[in-house]
Image (tube, rainbow over all chains, first blue to last red; front, side, top):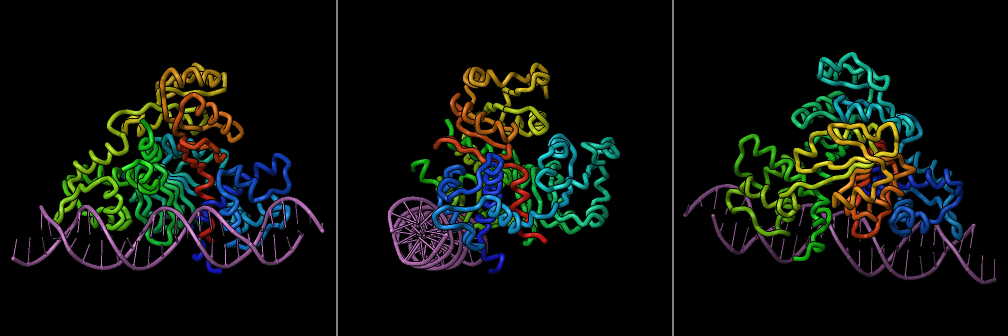
Length: 206
Length: 206
DNA sequence: TAGATTGTTAATCGATTAACAATC
DNA sequence: TAGATTGTTAATCGATTAACAATC
């Protein structure tokens, strides 16, 4: 089965399954049916079984899925069985908060590099990570061979920095800047301007 | 036309149009065609025209859309013509970064209330906003009549806090916690655990 | 007028849901 | 065995794209 045969929307749901299965495992559960998992997440049993069936059959008729086994399978599919290096660009408010956030490392994402353009930040450390000058982005990104980037720069800089990241070999960008990026095919982008999320909700209010 | 006839995916794209139209306006543009706007955003002219057509016809054959007029229309559709009050729960790393983020106020979202359970934070101010005890959530949320919430609490607290928010009248939640919320119909939730975004990208890498 | 672009319809494409034989 | 649940197929539903008459 070719990778690009599987709908992106299916891939996007796998981390949610992982998140919930981890929680169930911590609670001591060993087996779960698609029906019960669906109820926990707020989806349908059909959708879960269909999603998993793109990759094979991991369940057992009559009982359901072994949580540990399913977690291992899903982690394998998403290439989460080894740690990933991440570069963060923009060590302002949001950037430094993400540098201090312990959740990344816990889940296998290590921020190995932090860049900023502000001279008063360069050379300082946040959560043990030294802030390097953004001028040397290409050099550092290539040296670390990092593929993932988190972008927390001002809107006016976002596209320029994204272009430089892609030039340097970055293949996926989580973009918090209030600017919708345009990147070449093959580069995966999640635009998650916090304001945009609020703006689409207000349609349904009042 | 009933509100719930319009696909949610269409509503979700309107803020992106607003974002890009604002930028074009700042650059001095007055008129834009669906074709050019699509190129800027990385979508298709067909989709933009179809999306807008749910709400009426705002363009002019032969030339395109008046940017100022279209912005006003889109802001009206999304109820963005008046400011919105927001409550933030969880003033840890990410929460305090969002409290300090100026982008919300600039775009009409005012964080009027910040809550935390940590006694050493309560009473302190972050970016001019006093941190109040989360025990008094119901009281404060009702008093402020706030409809929007940002959740930046640990995973273990997320669902409990969300339930209390909904009970108190909150109708939309932007959830940064690494926990996928289950909320009643009619409550709008955006789950944006930063780790989940990275996890779906690694599928395509390596 | 001639060229350009809209708004809308129909065709296509893709995702979700329902149903059920297979089987633990 | 009887009950439960999977994996998969077919049916349904919904979103995107293409095409074009209308018209600025």
